[in-house]
Image 1 (cartoon, rainbow, N blue to C red):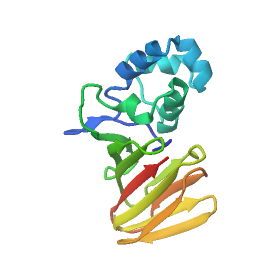
Image 2: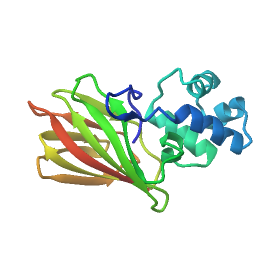
Image 3: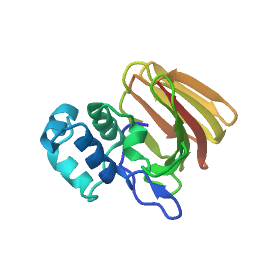
Image 4: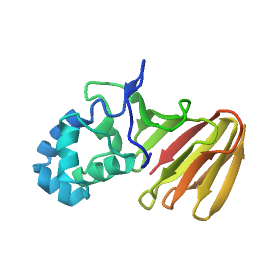
Length: 191
C-alpha cells in the first residue's frame, strides 16, 4: 500500500484522498493531538498536515501509513468514507506516468492488524517504488495479464500471467511492467 506518487482524482471512481482531510482532522482531535504533535510523532511536516486537512495537497501512501500509525488507527480508517457501512473502498490510491497505470484499493478486512485487497494496472515501462512496510507485513501478488517484475531487496522475481508471488513487504521493493502491453495484477497486503 505504500509510498510512491500521491493519488490524483479519477473520473467515475472515488479518490483515496477524498476523505483524508476530514478523517485526519477528526482522528487527530479524537486522539487529543495538535497538528504540531502529530507532525512530530509521525515525521510528516506540519505544513503537509495543514494542507491535507484543508484538502489542498497530495501525499505518498507511506506518509499516510505514518500518520495512521501515529494516530493509532489503520490506513483504511484514514482514507475511507466515514459514512460507508461496507468494507468496500474502491478508491484510486496511485497513478503512474503511463495513463493505464493505477492502483485501486478495493477493500479491507480485519486481520491481525489489517488486510487489504488491491487491483493494480501498470502501463508499458511503468514502475512503482515502495518503501519497506513495518515488520510483519506480507504481500501476495497474482498477475492476471502481462509480466510484472517484483524487484525485492532479497532478489528480483518475474511473474507471468497466471503466476503469483508471496513475500515479506518489510523490505525495499518495486513493481515494474516488463512486458510490451498493459500489466494487471491483484495485490493482497496482510499484517
